[in-house]
Image (cartoon, rainbow, N blue to C red):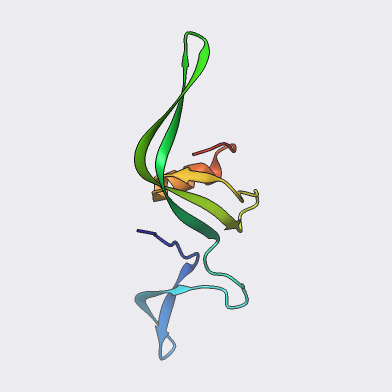
Amino acid sequence: KLNVVFIGRARQIYRGGEATEELEAKVQKDTSYLVNLSLRMERREERTETKIVAKRKVENTYKDIHFVATVEESGFDKDHTGLEIEEPTYDKIVEALFRKGGKA
């Protein structure tokens, strides 16, 4: 499952010069993109977990089917290309994009 977030704003609908209580989405027509983020989804069957045990770094690799989203394009100020987000949800994507770098 892949969720797509469209960037836009709401504007009031007018009929006969009178404002109604209805709203509709408005986006800039001169913008070359509506989605500000492009992710490639990949199914992986192994996961590596790193822990510090007795002041030593220990890596364990085990079988586990999971999904990873890799940022292919980003319209944000910071370059996120190549950033990997494991088991992506809306909250994990937001956290990964707006924190100080690193793997999500």
